Amino acid sequence: MPPMRNAVVTGATSGIGEAIARKLAAEGMRVALVGRSEERLGQARRRILAEVPHAELRLERTDLSLLGDVRDLAERLADPPPDVVVSNAAVIADIADRTEEGHQRTLAVNHLAPYLLMRSLVEPIGGRPARFVVVGGSPQGLTRVPIDVEHLELNTIRDLGSVRSFRPFLAYARTKNMNAMFVYALARRLEGTAITVNGAHPGVIRGTRLGLEHNRGLLRAFGAVSQLMVSPGGPEAGADTPTWLATSPEVEGVTGRFFVKREAVATAPHTTDPARCDRLWDESARLVGQAAAL
Image 1: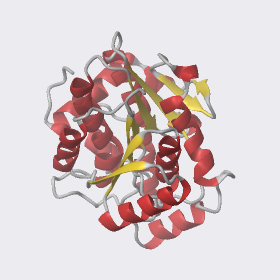
Image 2: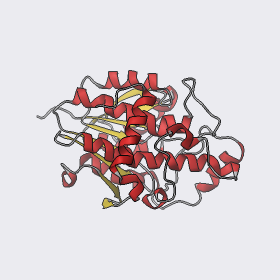
Image 3: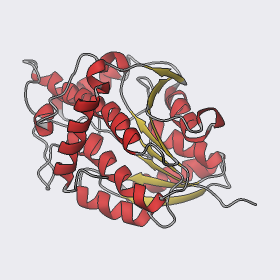
């Protein structure tokens, strides 16, 4: 009998992340659920076990807004190294919300955390096959929010328009733009290895906590209203393409692509330009305190 494969899912305590974790467990993988709350991790585990009684689940309480926590998480996940890593966690935080490490929270959770986690796991994985999946944003939406690759922090705190209540959503969109660029940059750096890296847009899905957990006032109200303007199918539908990328033989060896509804799609030229992606990589390395070379 082949050894059990190991998977990691961030943002696994509700919505799309929990649905991805449940599907991977049903495929026979041992799944590490990554979340910020011990209580919500336990609740998610109970819900998954109710549907997949044989599931082997590992709870990893981590605050992904803190790079120190992300480094500690990577160390814990390195033995045994994962076969699948799905970066799903995301927030829409107030523009003024900064972590104790000094980073704007939306940037820290949505971009810096997956950047640091995935590149930290490359060495432990070594020559073994593995799949990295980044849950990103709408390719159509990405065309309208090019980022400043020279000053990443400014993308989530400046030039966000005159309507204050919508600024956090533009900041969020810019980090989703970074997700696509990170996929392309990491995939190029892993060419010739057995690790693949792909992105997926799950759709705008009802039943997630995105836009609600850290928000207050008009931002929270808009987040609640936005849940009424969503695609049908709920978290199960949103989890389909990321899970397919993590498990399907159809995409074995496929890397550096972005998928919607299991179809590879093009994202905006400003997200695919190698020089811009390289600059994003280098600036991200500086912000997380690592050398640019992988």
